[in-house]
Amino acid sequence: MASQGNQVPNTQPAEQPSSIQDTRTIIVASQNPVKIDAARQGFQAMFPDINFVVRSMSVPSGVPDQPFSDQETFRGATNRAFNACTVLPQADFWVGIEGGVCHDPNEEKVLQSFAWVVVLGKSLDDESPGRAGKARTATYYLPEETSTLVKGGKELGDAEDLLWGQTNSKQQNGSVGLLTGDVVDRKGYMQQAVVLALIPFKNPKLTF
Ligand SMILES: O=P(O)(O)OP(=O)(O)OP(=O)(O)OC[C@H]1O[C@@H](n2cnc3c(O)ncnc32)[C@H](O)[C@@H]1O
Image (cartoon, rainbow, N blue to C red; front, side):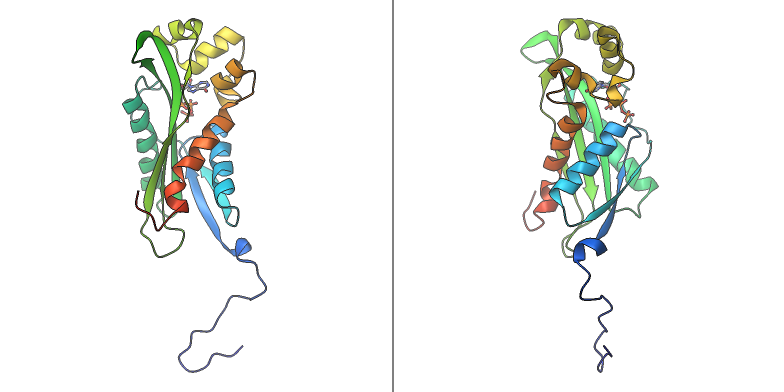
């Protein structure tokens, strides 16, 4: 159709569904395939009309390999998201996921396991400013057999591998998969927290 006067010509073919055209890039700040898949599936579940291209990169978390408190774990997830954003600012979303453990506040010798997810992102409606979302996974308790190894300095993944006779379980079903007999695996466990961290992006008119 020819443009009339000062009108901007509509260059978008009317028959193209918007789902094909709306492509966004996500950077996952980890090379762990479980985290990459959890992020991809979380975004896709929340925004089924958008086509997501997912890239992954290793960035410093700024915390020990095995975070040992809620704050340290949250800081690791936040640092990962911000560091990925600094390295690849041309993307649309940056996702930091950090697994951690902490002592049970009511029973000092017992360890809890959980992860934090932090998402930084540009606006999806082109009207609102960019924003950040965060969520913590559910918490589960580690058995004494694992806790003792972790308190002795082993990373949780290595401790579970030793206990269960596995290799690299943190990149497969994870500690939560081993303990639940795969009723909940590490990917599904993290995917739910990715979905929860996307609540501010799903509700751009609300204040978070
Ligand atoms: O490559 P990165 O992104 O660092 O992924 P990771 O699995 O090594 O590291 P996390 O930050 O997720 O977790 C920190 C540590 O906690 C351990 N961990 C946390 N959750 C776990 C799970 O569900 N299963 C196995 N190991 C887990 C794992 O050994 C990590 O060294």
